Length: 86
Image (cartoon, rainbow, N blue to C red; front, side, top):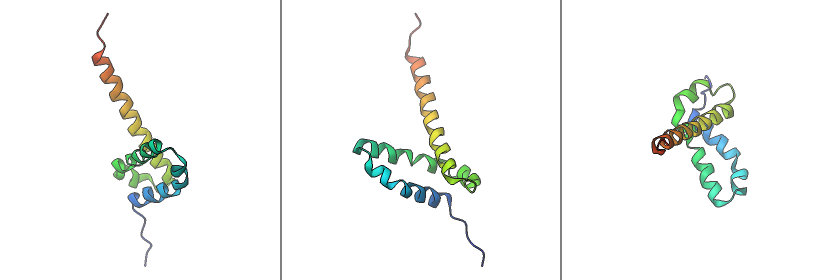
């Protein structure tokens, strides 16, 4: 019988578990933000499954970074719309 590969969702969950001690050492409000960050890779399951076989944590972190970058761009765009020209 051939060996089945883990799903990217399972890879994400295992990596999150590995960071459990780090999470527990954070303040409560930071724990909530930490958990929110770990939802980001699940928004990119298809891309993650495609490349995660190389170095899974890099794929997870890149997904988190992409979501942070998108938030920054949205904030910048919103800020440009609210600033009135001099």
